[in-house]
Image 1: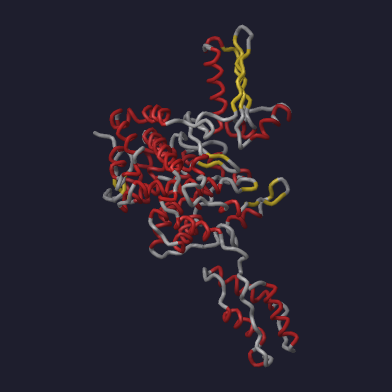
Image 2: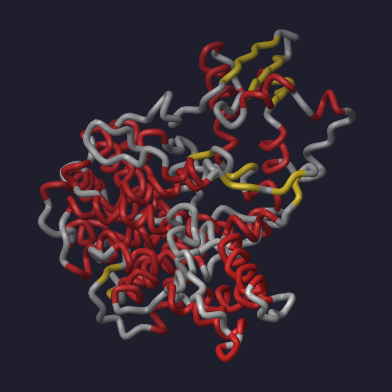
Length: 504
């Protein structure tokens, strides 16, 4: 029922000679808001009618009964969490395109390689020690490399962190950046603990990529522009992938989204200024919370359905932010427009990139340009006098501290041609001047690993073996590659976890 309908009904009461409080409509609206905030949803007709009757005074009612028109919903359209939940719950493996399935396998191949290397990082070792101390070590899910058995929620986090630890995993950058593979360890942990198949894992993986990447497209501007980290958005995507793995109902999925997103709003400080171990931890933590939220929802625990586009949800709280004189906003329609549902659909996973270098994402274009310049001109290190690197302002801001990035004028700070192309392209130009005074220049708009210049399975294998050979051995790396690239035929994923475990 709309406020207009309420006012019409109150007006009818006043015309009948009944004295009403001046704030009658506001009182009803307040009651309505209170009821909705408790998760009741739309008020039933008789409930709202009773509130009006109380205001009119039962003893002094006119003979005709005031009719409350409930034909119009309190929401002009369905809440986005419901649309996403219904889509995810209806999507099956048979609806996936062959290209999307192949991409999911390649991203798993890349991600496991990153995890093998990530397991050797100091922060990964600290986390493993901490979670070992808190666990009995007899759960149904397995941590990579060490073989530590624990519950699926902790395994989701530990494995997700290993994938992310070296900042070497995948990358997608639109209004906001994201690394969708930060989230896929969560469905893997549930897949193992629930005894599910490789096809189930592929389905959940493609769902994770779809929702995470769409969330990073809809900001106007992205949340990163006004100081929030993209892990804030990851918390909305993670429970959808895990929820599909658990075969949640749409209603349970809606709650899972609400539970998860209620707990993971992340300030951008984790990637600004002095970097700490939290930089590569917040997104895997969102994956962990997504796993726990889906499990809670399966047991009947509820979460706010309006967490995205309803009262005081994501869109509403950020709408208070002023960016260049305008309120921040989101394109909610774009979030759910043309969600893929058949083998003929275009899945977002095909638009995600990989990293060919173990460095921050915006470093890839200039490094690709430099390597091309060196290779094409056969330049030796001792011949180099100067290297000039031109990048977009965002790259300079992220990659350079105040001592490295000192534009002396607006002209040196901004390159209008480069800025106009970002984020569709990440243009960089590298100019190398040699000791003999000659200069060699190369411009790169997309780095190696971008979907427009993708890494092949053989190229991923080089990266995989470089990261994993010293951890689990070359033979085991080959077996892992074979299993991953045929994972759709696996009845269970236990062998995948066994092959990631280092032999004593």
